[in-house]
Image (cartoon, rainbow, N blue to C red; front, side, top):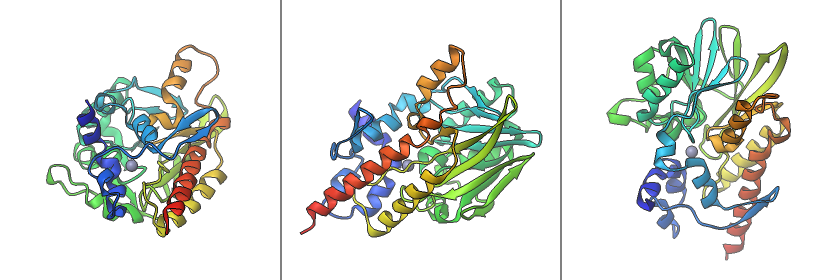
Length: 305
Ligand SMILES: [Zn+2]
C-alpha cells in the first residue's frame, strides 16, 4: 500500500527532483515529502506530507470517476475523485481543462457522455500545470477529438517532456499571461501563477446561472517544493499576490480537495443554494499554500549557516 502511494507521487514530485540536488534528494526518489513544518489554518493542521496525501488520495481515487455533475452555468465536473477535469460547454463545442493521466481519458470520456455531451465536441484542451497527473492525457484527447491544445509558454518545456508511450505532447497555441481563449461566447483568461511549475496557470471566466453572473476561478496548485530557490520565491510571491486579487465567487482547483469538492457535492445532492458559490472560501487554498510556503522558507532560513 505504502509502495503504491509513493510511486504515484512521482509526477507531482518532479519540481522537487529538479531543485533538490543536495542532501534532500532522499525525498525526491518517490518518497513522500516531510511531515514538517506544520501549520494550522482555521483549526485544521497541515504538513507538506498531509497536503500531498490529501491532494492525491489513493491510486484508486486518482483513477475512479467521481459522479459527473454541473457546477454552475456551462461548467461541469468530469474528473476522478481526486484529479479534477472540467468541461466548459458552448454552442460551438466544449473546452476541457485538465486531461489528467492518460489512463483516465476513457474515464473522462464516459463522464462527458453521462452528462449528455459528446466527447468529440471538445475543441480546446487547457491545463492548470505541466505535471503528468493533470496533463499527461492531452495527446490522447487530441487524437480522439482533434482538439487544439493550448499551454502557457513557461510550461512548454515541461509539457514537452511528458510523452506517454513516446507520443509527442501536442501544443497548438502558446499562451502568455493575460491571454484569452474564446469559444462559442465563453472566454477564459490565462493568469500566469508560477511556483509549483514555471507556467502554472490560474484560469478565470464568468458563468451565467439563473440570471446572475459569477466569477469562476480554476485555481492551480500553489504547493511549494521542499527546497525553495530564489526563483521559486519570486514566483510564489507574485502568484499569491495575484490570486488574492482575482475576483472569485466559485473556486475550483486542479485537485478536488483544494475546494472541498466532495463535501460540496454532498450538499448539492441535498438541495438548497448552489454550494459551489462560496466566495468566503475562495482564497482558503491560497492561504494554506502561502502559509506553508512561508513556513518552509523560515525553516530553510534557519538551516542556513
Ligand atoms: Zn503538480
